Length: 161
Image 1 (cartoon, rainbow, N blue to C red):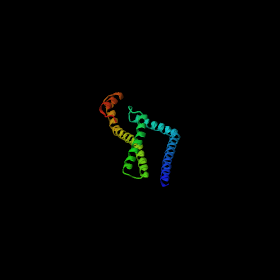
Image 2: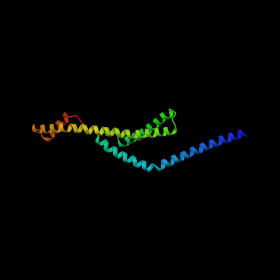
Image 3: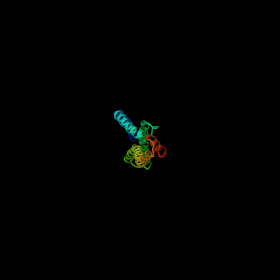
């Protein structure tokens, strides 16, 4: 009689696991479908933000869409890798979920941070070169060059920002 109960419990457990798996799959599918429109809007906003930053940095070989894919892909990869690392350390489920969240947020913000640092560095170089450029322009005009010739003088002697 006890063997019958063990088999029934095992069958119930398998049925419970399948039900939980199907419920999780349905919830994931519902979340993906319901978040599709907000994600499309977020991607569009990211591309607009990245377009302005890339134009300012004169990075025309990278499209805003590519940078957006790198950002979201990096977020997913960082989250999964950190979660796997924590899972390998035999931490609890909450620690793994927290590690996934931290890794995802870090992966999401790293490309934005890189763009910000590049923009700040370029602006600083431009500010540093502006005074020298204006002095060169004024000296060229004093020496009898016209405005275009003085600008060419700056172009040949100065480094791009």
